[in-house]
Image 1 (tube, rainbow, N blue to C red):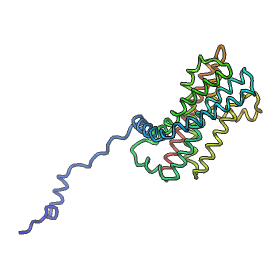
Image 2 (cartoon, rainbow, N blue to C red; image 1 turned 60 degrees about the horizontal axis):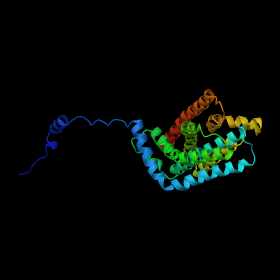
Image 3 (spheres, helix red, strand yellow; image 1 turned 60 degrees about the vertical axis):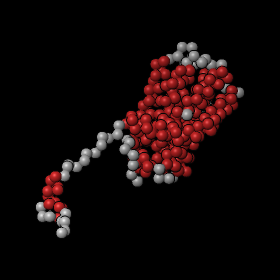
Image 4 (tube, helix red, strand yellow; image 1 turned 90 degrees about the horizontal axis):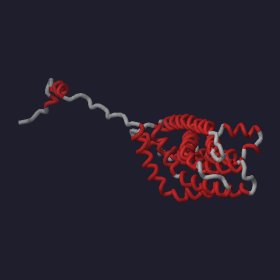
Length: 273
């Protein structure tokens, strides 16, 4: 006696189809903030191995520039620019230079394919990586700022402004670094763009603006980290202009939003290729 499957009996397929449940619904779309936290923790764990060399190089470089400029500038307004610029330079070294190299290598090695398969928004990938790299700049920035203030005899009372300067300037520079790494056709070009950006932050941020030609000052105004430097430098005065400080921080925040949006667009563009 043979057994005939029910799906081959005339009318059986229709019966099975009618009895089958409806198509399964897709799960809810991943939200930005939980995805951002997950990517941030993953990137932080990945970069933890290189934390000590990273902090040493970025901090040592900025402190060395501060010591070198001690014999060039006086203890007035020029000293404020040197200390503020050297402190923000730590942020530029990581957020602009290293992040451009990281995304450039990630794109060249096919690492973006891994992130493209994850149910996370593109902005979460960019912000998570930028936040993880920027986290390593906090100790070096604080050490450089304290060392520079002691070296030039500047007050330490308004050091708390770095709580706002570091994330806002870091966001603006991290967006530019990520965009350079994602848009560069080759990782070598991404490294070159990151190095040029850090050199611009060094020359235009640390050197006093009064000694620059007018054309160089215009280029300085186009650099996002300049406004973080200006915001921090204004707090060294006896009566800081807090309205001007807020304006400078607002510019950093605005540029940060735009640059991170461009980086998210560049990530989507690179991930689908």
